[in-house]
Length: 295
Image (tube, rainbow, N blue to C red; front, side):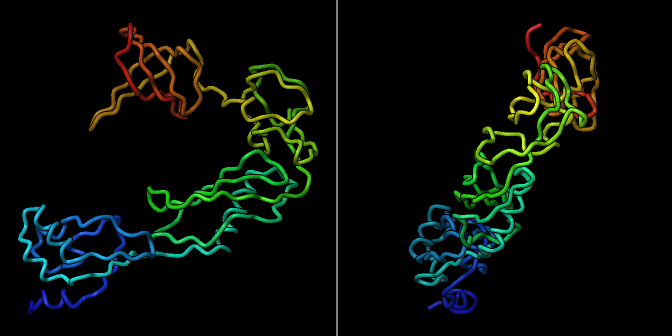
């Protein structure tokens, strides 16, 4: 029968953890420090329980080169509980509505959100994303909930919509390559079920963007019909930047493609004609993504 600190560990029947793996230190924190990180297996789901046996601990010690006899300091069968927090249905519903409304056209209301439920998550700040399918009076939505870098829950929801979509449209026909400004845009009432797939739903999704194809007046637009206005045009000279620890190297290159902020484009260095790929910053500089291409 163990005595002292190990006796206290053996008497413990349940421990709470909040990580993705169960370690020996979770069950027996008084063991030598070099043994505490020995892995005993995956944690249960948030809010759930798992049991670790003394035999499993002895085997983990043996695999790690430790003394299996140290397992006598652990309960014969120990309960492990994963810490959790509850995201209530009402709170999730409110978040989904707010995020969806930011994407829906003005004039459209959400009558109900179906398919949501209470969600059990590990401790931490949840991040919720909502992706809408084709906008209809009954619109499908994908709701994803993450904590940290891991996605924990994915729900298929349905938004029940009502109203009439006040949809941005062009006042006049514009040719490909034209940049849309506020004077070009008005709104038109469109039945929800008549919106095209991937429709432009807000004026700010249109103003300042360049048309990829000819667009007629008064017709709802798809988002794919526009693109960001390039800040670098093919044939122009731009600075390209290589950043290394304690060093910033700037060269000049000629753009081989148009590029908006965030785009990767090919450029050709002016000093050696080497082709490189750079990512365009908002200030019009290019940060090198790859180099050493054909001359």
